[in-house]
Image 1 (cartoon, protein in one colour):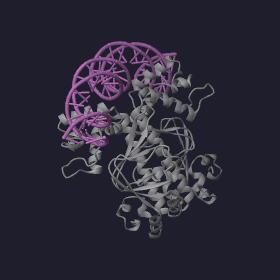
Image 2 (cartoon, chains in turn cyan, yellow, brown, blue; image 1 turned 90 degrees about the vertical axis):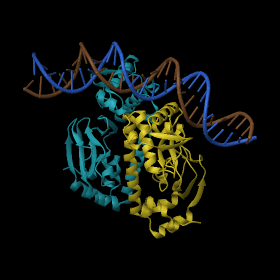
Image 3 (cartoon, chains in turn brown, red, cyan, green; image 1 turned 180 degrees about the horizontal axis):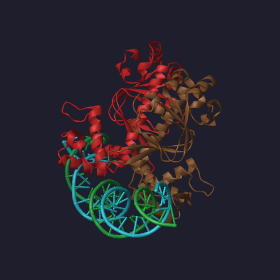
Image 4 (spheres, chains in turn orange, cyan, blue, red; image 1 turned 30 degrees about the horizontal axis):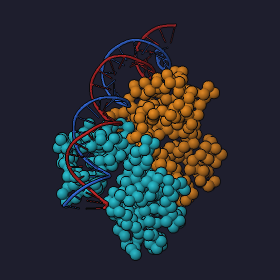
Length: 225
Length: 225
DNA sequence: TTTAAAATATGATATTTGTCATGCTTTGAT
DNA sequence: ATCAAAGCATGACAAATATCATATTTTAAA
């Protein structure tokens, strides 16, 4: 059983605000999980009752819309805490989480961490700060959705994924998404996403090798209108 | 000088979690302001350094997009706290706030309320809950923006404004927005918003009298595709 | 009250995006 | 290795939305 106190991942999220004693207790009650690519971590409408600390891998947070399509609301990176909102509200979650590659996560039950949330102001403030940041990002997404073209949004998504998740040795984006995923990030039809990616290839902005994508001209993408 | 302890508005936001002593102190340092319709309360990029407790009136939170259009991200009601995020982060605000009708607000300086945020866990938890709720709503807006048609979004906006802000004696929506505001809520061209409102009139879903709008057939609006 | 400016309305047209159809590739299970 | 299923690609067309032009109405200032 690994140990939260020694876990480096902690530094990247609100758990860094916990004291040594709190960490020891959390260490004792957490459960580690391995999640395979494509697996569901939790589903919209479930009661998740805890938070997931993402030690490795990436997952998507999606929400089913009325027309039956999934919208990807956020990509969650290594280091993030998943399900923070479940700590604060007793409602079921409004999002689903699905692994985009193999993941390592620790699950910390709500009732254990709630103690800390109530007693350690540093921890609470950190959670609050994280949520404020999420909210600000959500505002940006709203504005982009409302005011930018599909092509611009897709270009930005590629840049975002490049800067956030980085590249492989061959400069390929290290997070591999299906064309449908790209469509669900920018909120368009799958065919439209495919067409625009093809266009980007013709323009020399990207190159592809199977599902892998390499950005060839970052500035080109940033200038898309 | 009015008194926070006796103020009913408090019941509608996180300030309800403050103790009597805390309220007395807040009462002493707050400033009341009257804001006229159309006036700017704060501007994107400003350091607001406090929260506004909205005693009366409605305002819009907007964000300027790259193409020069304002996107309305949220409408703020009587009872809401405005600028909560400034408490948590030291960054300048990412939004502008503009009054949609005459408003009464109290401004509470950040350094005063921060004390409470750090010392009263009930208050902190309440702020946290409010932010979690805002975040959930923001997710819904993202999905709607991405997946629904302009017509659907505009229909929903009308229903939302009806249920949230209510109507006058004559059943007119009590919040009066320009067509441009409607366009900026749903993220479309002003002409498109105007056209769709005209269509809704022809369909008998709404009637208008100047800028005022009356919903004539709520179910019709809810069934728009 | 008059009058200019702003907001609303609507037509014509261009552009963007979605939908349906069909063929080609890749992937993964047997 | 083979084969079906899933994913990718692209054409043809339809629908939604944006843009530009111009008239009409409303609003607010002098």
